[in-house]
Structure formats: structure tokens, C-alpha cells
Length: 459
Image (cartoon, rainbow, N blue to C red; front, top):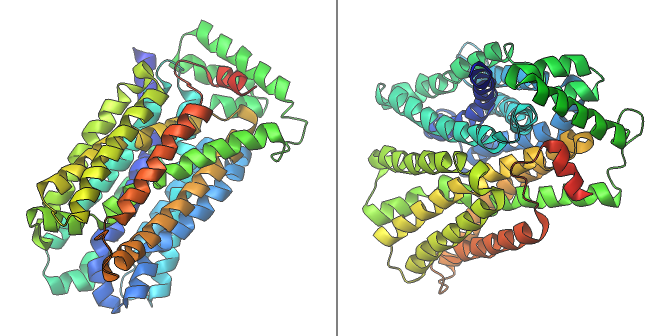
């Protein structure tokens, strides 16, 4: 019981990287209305301020691979926590500093670097330290933390804004919203010093005795010794210590491509289009106005959390692939409801139901399961670099979807086509069908297997 509690503790601490991922992504949504008025931003400049963090996320994910190899997973997460704290303070710099839009964007990009590094290292660290029987559940804590972070920052920004007048919000309120991230950032930084280094990384560096000590803290001694033998055999067979890895060799490139495609398809489900631009649908469906945004977010967050919990407690029982299949069917049904009601100009409760079915299905499947698979499907010798590539591609896909969605909708509606704004959702359905095909043909079932046993599947 003591060992399980220790594993849960270090998993929760590591998952705080996901909470900050959600918090940092969400804080700009709460603050942008007021800072836009403070800086008198044009629509184009507002889009740059809001989306600039994605540039940092992309770069952060790319450098995270090398950082993880050289410094380790733990120290990489410490660096991400420091970047979160710097971004939180700098984004709300007091007026005595010569703050400009450029300064704000720089600090938002710094925060993005932290997100990129954490989004690669946190789930990978959790996977590398968890026993195979509960690894899926443990990694899913990361996705749960993202959801909780996104919801909690909305509540924080709501209550900060609600207690100030509009003039005060425009002057200082948005700064307090950014500064609120200092609390979870500094907590994450402090708690990271309590977690051990990844046993897989320690073995890669030849520190097997230290790796065994870590494993013995989270499982019984016999299992720990067996894991060390498997890890050492995997490393020895790969000759990773002496042989330079050719990432463009067919055997390695194929694995990286499969993982990257799966990662990109997570974004091509349209999840962020729904989260970023769903307010208009809510307004049409139930008459929600600006004053009812909290109701909208509570509803989405509740569904998100509940079905992420369902995934957490079923991923190691049912397996990864079955959840993707079930979730994909649900996402298709949700978007069919939404798309058809939009196309028929019959937006209402069915449209809302379609959104909620989609959110529930995503939270059950592609939301958490992609992080589980990415953290465990790559062999030891290439895990850091391969996951870095896959996560960077995911952030690039996020940017493409976020920027193209309003353009496609606007073009559709303005051209008076028969789609009536529904076209993007049918495009997303096509990508979700592709997810089913890719999962069936190329994704291995990893339930109940050690990370070293998963390597033999690829062989």
C-alpha cells in the first residue's frame, strides 16, 4: 500500500505539468477580452497574442527530446516549471515596466516553451515509472490534469473579473489573471524535487543500481529486479550507448511516422475547434449570451472530467484500441448531429447534444489514450526523440486547425453554400474515420505489456 501511495504521489506531481498545460492555455481566453482593450488590439494582432504560445509549444516540444536525453525527464520538467513561472509573472508585468504587445508575446512564447517541454516529458516520465498493469491509468492522470487545469483557470479568471469593474479589469484585472498561474507553477517546481529520476533514463546512463532503488520504491523487489534485467537486455540489444542511432532507417522511421500520424489525428478530430469556437453554437442552441459563458464552460468541463475518469478506470481493463474505436464512433455520431442540424438550419438542443456527445467521446478516447500510447509505444533508445517529434507535430496540427477552422466556416457561410457552416464538421468526420483505419492497421495493443515487451511487437 505504501508503494502504491508513493507511485500515486509522484504521478500526481508529474501530472501537474498537464494542469499547467491546461491552465496556461486557458488563461489567455479569460484575459484576452480585457488586454485587447488595454492595448487596443486589431483583430489580427489579437489573434497573434492569443496564438503566439503555440509557437513556443512547437519549439518546446522539438527541443524537449534532446533535453530529455541529456538532462533527464525530471530536470526537463523542472525547466518547464521555471518557464511557466517566468511566463506567468512576465505576462502581467506591472505598469512601471515598459510593457508592450511585443513584451507580452515574448512571455507568452516562453510559457509555450514550458508547455511543449512538459507535454512531452510528463506523460513519458509517468509511463517509464509505472508498472505495466496500471500504466494506462497512471498516464491518464496527465489528461485529467489538463482538463482540471483548463476548468480551474476559467473559474479563477471569472472570479477575478467578477470582483472588479470593467475599467479595473482593463487596467489590472487581466494582469492578476496571468499572475494567478504563479501559484500552481511554483507549487509544481517545489514538488518536483520530491520525485525520483526515471529508472529507464538512469539505465540508459549506466546507473542501474540507482534505477533499481527507484523501482523498489514503487513495486516489490523481485519485480523490480526482473524489470532491471529486461531494461538492461533491451539497452544492450540496441547498443544505444555506443552506436549512433539512425532515425531515418526504415525500422525506426516507420515507428516514428505511425506515432506522429496518431498524434496529429488527435487534433484533426476538431477538439480545439469545438473548445475555441463553441460559444456561438451554445448561443444559438440555448440562447446563451456572454453572461452565461460560465454555464457553458461548466457543462463542457463536467462532461470532460467525467469521461476522462471513465477512460482512466477502463484503459487497463479494456485496452487502448477498444476505447479508440468506441470513442471514434461516438465522435462521429456527435458531429453528425451537429453537422446535420447546422446544414438544415435547425440549430437547437440536438446541436448541443451533438457537441456534448463529441466531447464525451473524445474524453473517453483520443484525449487520454493518445498520450498513453505515445508514452509507451516507442522503444527505449528512441523514446525521447520520437515523442518529441510526435508532440511537436501535434502542436503544429493544433495551430493549423485553430487558424483554418474560422476561415472554412466563414467561407462556407459567406458564399451562401448549402453547407450553412457545417462543412468543417463533416471534414472532421472524415479524419475520425481515418483514425479507426490507422488504429486497426498500424497501432499495437499495449495493454498489460512492459515497455520492453512492446519493443518486441515492432520487431
